[in-house]
Amino acid sequence: AQTVTQSQPEMSVQEAETVTLSCTYDTSENNYYLFWYKQPPSRQMILVIRQEAYKQQNATENRFSVNFQKAAKSFSLKISDSQLGDTAMYFCAFMKHEGETSGSRLTFGEGTQLTVNP
Amino acid sequence: EPEVTQTPSHQVTQMGQEVILRCVPISNHLYFYWYRQILGQKVEFLVSFYNNEISEKSEIFDDQFSVERPDGSNFTLKIRSTKLEDSAMYFCASLIPPNTEAFFGQGTRLTVV
Image (cartoon, rainbow over all chains, first blue to last red):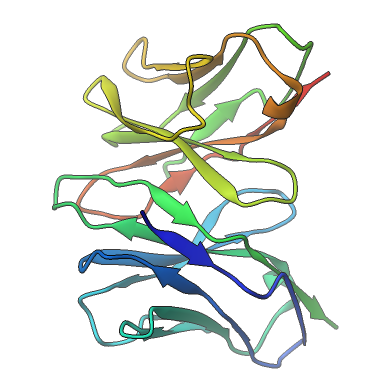
C-alpha cells in the first residue's frame, strides 16, 4: 500500500515571494506518478503539476515547479512569485503506473493550507 | 473545455435515508471514480469503475455503497442507509489512459442529519 505524508498543515507567504510545500511518500512500486492538486475555497480539485517517476527531470508549469527526489521519496512543490489566487489547500497525491491502458486510483496526503498575504 | 459535472451541489438527508449522487464524466473517458473528503480531512478513494464494473474499491466502500453507470453518460453513487458519518464532500472524477490526469467534478456536499 502507498502512503503520502504532508507534514505542514499550514503555510503562509507574502505576495511575490517563493514558498515550498513538502511531501514524502512510501511505496514499493518502481513506476508511478506524483501530483500536486490545488483545492481553492470553491472545493474544486485542480491539477497543478505532475511528475512521472521514471523521469529524472523535475516538472515545471509556469510559476510551479517540483523537486523530485526518488531515492528519498520526496516530492516538494515550489511556488514562485506567489499570487493571492494561490491561496488554497494543496494536496500531494500518488498514482501507481499499471500500464498504458490502466487508470489507477489516487492516494492523497493530508493537505497543506497555503495562505498568500498581500 | 470538457468538464465533469456533479449534481446536486448540496444534499441534506435524514439518517437512514437513501441518497443518490450523480455525476456526468467527460464523454470519452474510460475510468470513473468516487472520492470522499470529510470536512478538514484528506481526500479518500472510494471506488473506481471501468468497463461497466468496479475495478477497485476501498475498505470504506462497504455494502451500503453502490455505483452504477445506467445510461452510458451518468455515473451514480448510491448510499443505501445514510449515517451521520457519511457527511462529507463527494467528488467524482474521470480519466482516459494513457493520460494520467484525473478530472474532478466540483463535488457534492452531503449533510446527514
